[in-house]
Image 1 (cartoon, rainbow, N blue to C red):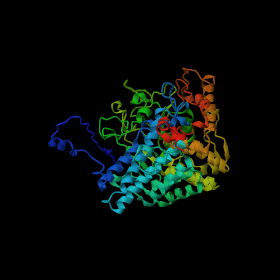
Image 2: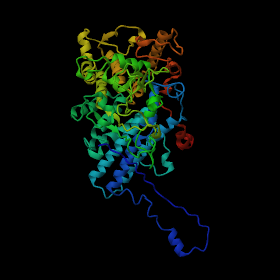
Image 3: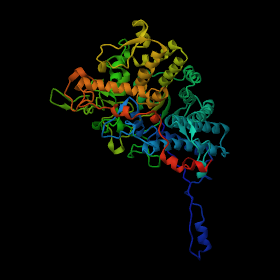
Image 4: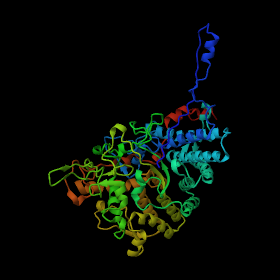
Length: 598
């Protein structure tokens, strides 16, 4: 059953009357001093279990916000090497031309703090709640602290620092605090997550699906330790999840990205959306009474012909990686009837992909009777592919612009596959290469692709460097290298995690914590230049391109979109993290006038 979190608004009304008139009767005074029976006050609320349940639902609603996991979250993908965009769309993040005054930066900071505030609000009023049982108090505290821990993990990984609010600010002065460095932010998050881990249930059911669980708290603890480079501690958390028996990989990779298979056995934590709630409202999540519980991320991902704007597109390197390097195991039944891997099928759509797209063929077709079947996938203007994840392309014929292309697919924030790959990374840091390969291959085997162990058996203990583009380098086969710690780690970083977890909000943080951004951008720019040289004879390309036909599949290009030309020029490590928003620096007196607050 899909949970629909009602955004309960706790509004405290106050009435200030300026009375300059004389001669008011005592009856009039009595009338004006009466309490509005329709107004909900703090004294009336925060008493019953229902009150705290509704407030907790509102807390979870902060996860749906636009820059958190809503429509604008995909703009952040443009910083990495999996997503690009056209010149006529906003390229601030793609070209590293953003600042603390950029609206998406300000919104992400403030929307994270919406979740922090709502969690702190619950924790504050729990201390005064006399009508709740001890078990109810513990449950709400565990959920609120897990929320706060998650938000501070996000703040730390996004901004490299944060203002830590341990308690609910009750005045403007209490809002003004110093910035804490990332180590302190992660330490604070871990304290919350440890409490949550100890007190959250292993599972919820019915209308409570989507709440934090023991598994969510444990996985988040592991991620904080991993990002802090405390690999032994991270490994303990991930192994606890693996050994719990609570989770497993789905049989079908696609089930992780459809509305029909939400809360499946692979899902450790989901952010809940619904496109049926409050029909007629816009898909952009507006955190108010008239807001929607859907996300309009489809507006950025779907093609123009399917009702979107296709403003976030796969890069050529990522298309090549998915279409060619994710080599299918022909003995696996999951691949029957497919020409490309399940992970490619679920993640992107190209001209030579399997299936259709929004119930239309991938190219315009003319039937024997002359009927023309038009396509929703134009493959023009350098658009060799489109994102499929998070869209309901299997069940819809197109998106509805009147509702902002509202989509109800739950966002799988933590998947078991991610835990397996993070655990493999920890094992590599512990020099346990063989064990790491075992867990990587669990993910590969589910996807129906050739495992690393199979490559090693057939190639004298070596594995292929699958991130090397055959097309760009005009190679007939991938180069093979020994399965050393360094080479298996390279595979995990450049092949396994991007293929398995593409467009799930992980890539940029991964590149930053590995210290590989500059190296990856240099390599992707070189690949881009090779593509231009192959197709046009020039390293910068020309437009329009001639029709090269199927020999250049899957790159059926009207022109070459250069995603890395400006990116490699503008990038510096200063852009690894978002800047603290200007509005925070201006309104927080301790930050704006630090000399006055020493």
